[in-house]
Length: 353
Image (cartoon, rainbow, N blue to C red; front, side):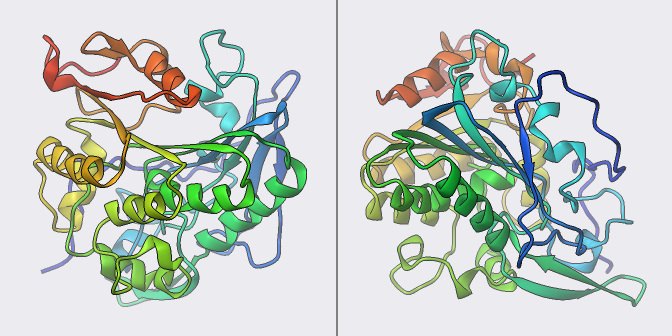
């Protein structure tokens, strides 16, 4: 039987369009070269904004994943990953949320920022070139270089924004999976800084294929020992959180998710995981809460995927708590606590708008 992608997948537009001109552009684009690369061999670039040198956001962008000829071929629809750093999706100037720098309600509007673009289909954690067979019998080679790309961005960051005292390491979607690992890496780079981590839109995953995917991407060849189980394996993305929290107990860890996130459900189907997402999310968070003192979470209603790049970051509330206030509490160093749409009168069907 041919491999079929669930219809719930959103398709990433592959058009490489010219970005509009931005007045008084706050962002710098860096193309590091070296071993960096996007999936199809095009150049990798990331973006940085220098503001308050003592406050720093390190953001790992999302953009799907690929693990077979069917999912890695950009000609196949629906497309499950972003293969180029030059797409508008990988430019912070096209996003809202925490990248709406002129919004007075933005709690990180005056922070320096490094926007780690994502174009390798490996949740920022791959380090191999992989050739996949396509359904028509041809082959495609993908450069899973998320690890090299991320570390190039972090090396530039350390050299150019070296005095940070307060750091938020965040990621959306695929970037949320990698965020706890890189929170540990950033904590080592800034040993005197207070580090907070926030994963946005990846808290519901559970699949027997996770360990195999990481092995295929070359992740297990370099992943720090502290980010694994005692036997060296990784069977759940929660392992990244528990390992990082054990090694770096001063980091605060947190997650945001929508209870019925359609993108997570789609990837769960493709990876043969359960699709009762809210229930799995609750189970994952119970595991993290038991293992990580002060672990915080915010569960929104509806099926929208991620919030950190979205305008509704400023308008959504659940159970009497607005997300932007919850985020402000998180980065202030206080315990942001647990917010769950299931505890509100509106329940978990009302989506952010």
